[in-house]
Image 1 (cartoon, rainbow, N blue to C red):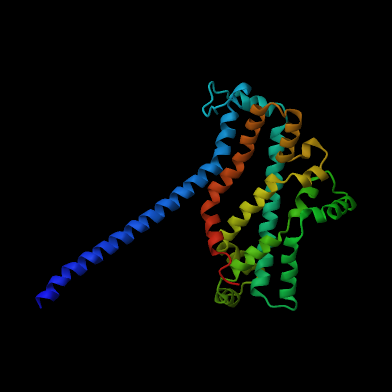
Image 2 (spheres, rainbow, N blue to C red; image 1 turned 120 degrees about the vertical axis):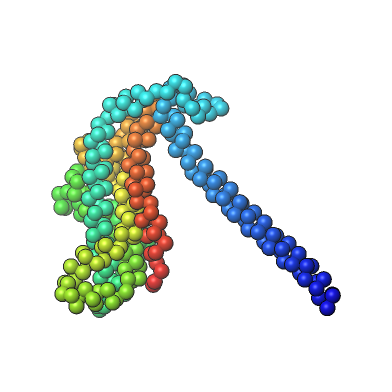
Length: 296
C-alpha cells in the first residue's frame, strides 16, 4: 500500500514533465512557423517598399550602395511631374472602366452558368462542363490571332468592346461558382419555387446573396487580371485615349526608361487601386477560397 502511495507522485511528475515537453515542442513549432511566414512576408513586401522609397528619391540616390531606404530629401513632386508627362488620368479611367465592366460581366455570367451546372440536370451537362474546363489548358497565345481576326470582322478594333467582350466570360469563374453553389442545400431552392419564385428570381434573390464570398474572390481575380493585362490591349488598341494603365506605363517606360524616379512614382499610383480592392474584400476573399471546392 505504501509503495502504491509513493508511486503516485512519481507518475504525476512524469505526466507533468511530458505535458511540459509537449507544450515546449508546440511553442517551438509555432515559433518556427511564424518566423518562416514573417520571412516570406518580408521577401514579398521588400520590392514594394523599395518602389515606394525610389519614387520619393532624387535620381542619383535610387541605385546608391548601400540602399538608402529613407529618402533624403523627400521629393513629393516626383508624382506630380510623372503624372503630368502622360495622360495618366485617362489611363486610370480606361483601366477602371474596362476592369469594372469585365468584372461585372464575369460575376453575372459565371454565377448564372455555375447555378445551371450545379442545380439543373440536362443532357450533356457533364460533357459541356468538361469542355468548358478544358479551355483553361489552352494558352492565350494560341487563340490570340483568331480572336484578333474575329474583332476585326466585327469592326471592334481600337474600341472598348475589343477590350471588354473577350474577357466577359470565365471558365475558371464558372468552375468556382459551380463548386460553391453545389454546397447550397436543394431544400432552399425547392422552398423558393413553392413560394412562387421563378428560376431567374431564385438566382437573383437566393443564389447571389448567398454567394458573396466566392463572388468577392472571383472579383479580385478578374479585376486584377484585367488591370494587369498588357498583351491584348497592345494588339487591339492604337488610340492613346483608349489605352489602359498597363499599356500607358509600358509606353511611359519606353519614353522615360532612365527616369526611374518618375517610373516608380507612376507604378506606385498604379498599384494603389488593386491594394485597396483586396483590403476592402479580403474577408470575403478568404471565405471564398476556404468554402469553395468542399463538394465535387
